Length: 314
Image (cartoon, rainbow, N blue to C red; front, side):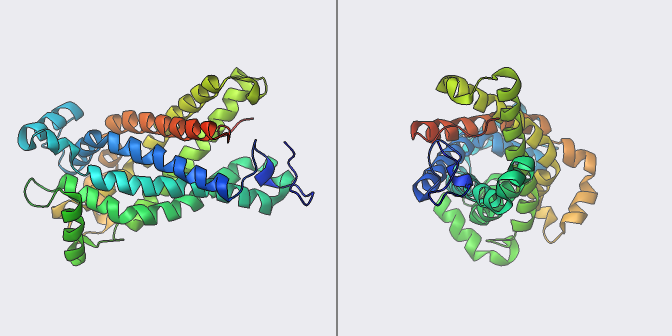
């Protein structure tokens, strides 16, 4: 396909197998909804265990023992707490994260022009993903705050139903700082995380198609391309988990009743950097690696099925 726009100028929106028009971007948004909503909601039990390990490490010492404590005390439903806000929150987040990444990436490439775009590709991936995540987190924040409150409140002290929990959050705005009280910590966790996730994904895909599958990308089967997508997503996820873990611990600790009214710096110094960086990290590496691998795989499978081609390449 020609890389030129109908007016004859170089245009990033014409680089792929199909032109990047409104229909392309909206399909990417739908792919993002499927990629993030389904995967995050599906691993709710891991998330409940992780949040409780960060907030109450004395009681919840590890993944398996944490899950069995929750099941013993709250029944099988205990490990699915927060499923509703997780599903809705991350569907919205995925819609903006993936859809707007495609929009911003094209926009920044066109601003930079052909030569600079090729030369500074990594900078464009970083700028595009950071810009998209700013909006994605605004959509996610109220639901993420509700999810953390449901998951970390002692049994019986806070409603676990989605509607009832939202109503309770609205009523207690002063103490919970709902709906955007966690936005800055969320940005500090999610923006570096997303920049790493998209940067390392694109970079690893590029390495695969340079060194492992050196023929033109289109000459490989969809199965091979989606295999590259999954492997690149998984490896990118492992890097991301390590990079963003301290900030993730702080987001969980902000919801702890004993930390009410404390600032991020105070919580960080009381907990200690080593604990922030390592508590629950093993669980999170497995969780984020698998999650990111599947997210990219679902997203690219959806894109491929719509005839939009998979993400990334040489």
